[in-house]
Amino acid sequence: MGSVGLALRWEHRISSVADEGGRRVESSESAAGRGRASNSLPDDAALAAACLAGDLRAYERLYQLHGAQMRNLARNLLGARADAEDAVQETFLKIQRGIASFRGQSSFVTWTFRILVNTCYDARRKQMRRKEQANDDSEHALPRPELRAPGAHPTLRMALERALAQLTRQQRDVFLLYEVEGFHHAEIAAMLEISETASKNALFQAKKNLRGMLEAPRSAEAGAQ
Amino acid sequence: MMAGCKDRERIFLDGSAEEWTALEQHAAACPACAGELRGWKALSAAAAEMRDYREDPALWVKIENSLREQEQSRTAWRGLREKLGLWGEGALVWRTALAGALVVALAFAGAYVVFHRGAPDAGQSGLLKNSALADVERTEREYMKAIDKLAMDAKPQLDSPASPLMASYKEKLMVLDSAIDELREQAGGNPSNAHLRYQLLAMYQEKQQTLREILETKP
Image (tube, rainbow over all chains, first blue to last red):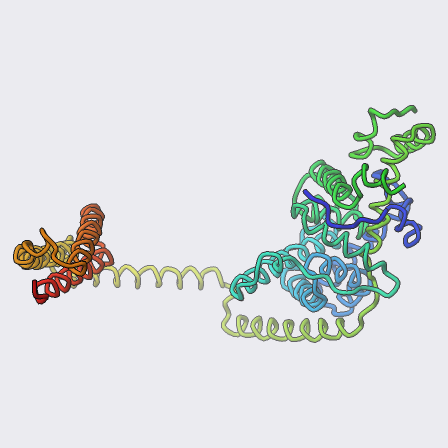
């Protein structure tokens, strides 16, 4: 796997844009700040029950709690904002259609994100088919990222997105779910229907590969100093 | 708890909070581990660049409308099912009767098809295919005979070509004969391939035309 062309010392540059990063990095599941994606179980069950009862306010609550995160994940998986919004909308419709089949083996939120990830896979397949039909070259088959939040570091983000596109699907999904969205390995395992160990391995490999792609070769670094 | 360089990868993969602390303590005195640890943490920090959790109330409006529409159509469908009594009291008996009626209807339809189809015609389509193939091969043989006659007539001119034009005709015929042999070999392995037969016919026609041109050329 080759370098994606980020010649600058990215480790140094990111320290100025994300000061919370150091706190979230450890793999210890007990680390503070990982709870964003998780929901307390009674709330989760109550939300599921209200959705099952057909209460639209419950769906609105679900959107308020996780909509932005769902949109962000979909956008990272699909590239385009419009595709991501379609995927989130489709996910809500699928939840409404399938809520009766939710048995509570995983949390409601985990179940919701599993539907979202699968919806994104489907959307991605459709994207690929459309692009194949349009005879686009394979380079364009990868999701094309759009500009993000003001204040985001565009070069770093683009380099990371380009490097992520070179990972295997599982490595990319696990990295996005763990590092970007803050899910636990147990939740990711349930979402992607893999084991927790596989999730940990995928994250480890993803980070190793990303480092290989993003970091300048040691000899170049030494020469620059 | 103590951690060393050899524990680093394992801790990166699946280390507990205590092990991470121990690794950080070790890294304070180990530049190699300090660099690795910094690189590892930097990736997590970089991941923050991929977060954009801005609210989008407009999207919720779209979702809400589509949820309402879906719910309305589902309600309408449920109402229809209830009116038909498909899921009402005694539905099991009703559905069993319906299934039974369908099985009987299918059995009658199957029997009708079997008894009104006439004499068994197994292999007829295969025979038709074979007879069509035999026709093609017979015509092909006759066509080849006619072309061979033309070739015999043109032989003296071709054996000792008197002009560069005749020499090039001779060469062209050699190429055509070689292509014909190749196609016939392929057709022999797959006699019912219509595409090969068409190609072969085109070659014969080209050979016939070439021979005619040779015979029309004055020596």
